[in-house]
Length: 305
Length: 321
Image (cartoon, rainbow over all chains, first blue to last red; front, side, top):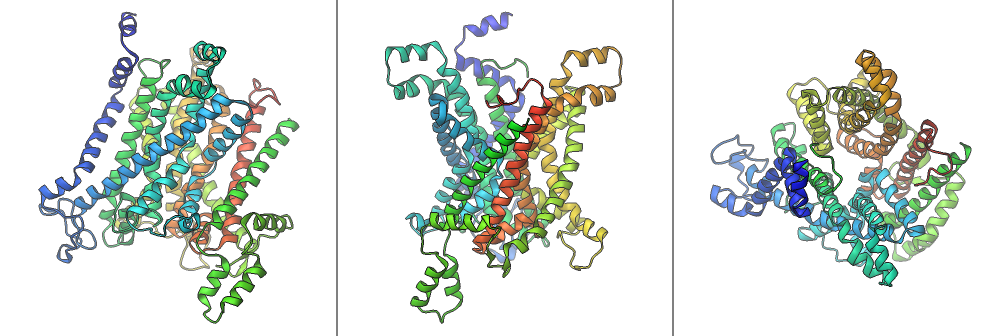
């Protein structure tokens, strides 16, 4: 009982932080994610210090075993696996972050509109959202990835950076329904609050109510949705790149590395391990953090989960 | 009862119609149309010929006109002609459908049994090593990329150990049943592993919830065995939410099936779709997409109906939330 009384004196953010810190899985995930993010940000510096080069082709060290010069060995062209893993992480993580933000943005806008407007708008938007949740995502991703951008009036350039923008858009277009549901639920409950009804009674413009009074109440769920969406979109990106529909060479992502690993799996099955481990660790860390945030930001969360 | 069935079926039908329009629009945005592809492979065609052919097949019309005429032909039971197979789509589909169904049903059966049994055991002993293990497996299954799991399965069982073939179909088309089944072990196992993780999580939650109810507490205090409690008193209650969740998971199962089919070279619906889109075989892609979506929407509608039938608290007609 005293703990509750103490907590009452703290700000909601502090209370959430205290609760988050108590969740061991979430803290572990956050640490792991920090390490992964740092290694992606400083990928260039790390490879330089270790004297590695992600793009240097060296046929002498083709499939070279683990050694001091190549900590994780060499790939089918003798490129250093560790350096490529770091570079691939840069692409995979930035695509994941950008697409998660975009997906959460789309979802928040749709959820806010549905929850705030109610009625027919709500029914239609939620029917679409439920449909997106029930239907298989991968066929849709494959169809979207095969769309010819020139027919939409975009440039025909599809290599390198353009493929990154493309994949972010595609993945965000598929990854929003979770965020929409969470935001709608928050908007619905905020709409019934007295302060919102008061604002309405005073005659505040509905748009202003939505932005000023309802949206802040939905901020927590949107942050949670963005985090959980990030794990999902990283998986989507990896699978599209694996199928050859995502990130295009010369850029590498973890999924694209696995596509090469599949071609050489009969000679060197070991090459398929590391990029997959990297994806797996990232997604599981993101999900741990997301779950931790959800419990921490929910005022009604049960203590000691 | 009749009313809710009609309501749900109608809803699924409308969704499917909208979906077919959207899919048609997306396919119209893909590179090239059938006549362009034909022209690319036959240099003797003059621009005049091409324009005439386009008018003949109607591909110069806007997509909604083509969509309406596609729907008209569909109403007559006509799926169109598959470019890749050089055969009517209707001739190609049944075998692929049968293949995917046998893959998916086998995986679903295995994972339902394993998932519910594991979830129930974990819920019975909360905080035990087993509970933690099940929880970790559930998290891991969601985080592991499906194609990577398949790659690791191949690397371990086909390449390193040499126990199982890495392709889903035997090289000899006349192979017997057991030889065929042996080729399917690895694909089914990969799909089942992914699905088990999803079911495990839901089953743990559903059984945990049902265990707190008073009649279960009574059964426990009477000293009934764990098995009997779970089987007689918990599962019937836990099944209701589980059915809905299982139906919602069908979409993920289908996505997993696409990956597994493409990777193990199993010519089911998923591989058909992948090949059709990369090979610009749009009639085939359309048919596969809508058949798959229709099946999943119907399964969801059926789950809704089953939910309403199983849960007396939900009145028919006001199930809409």
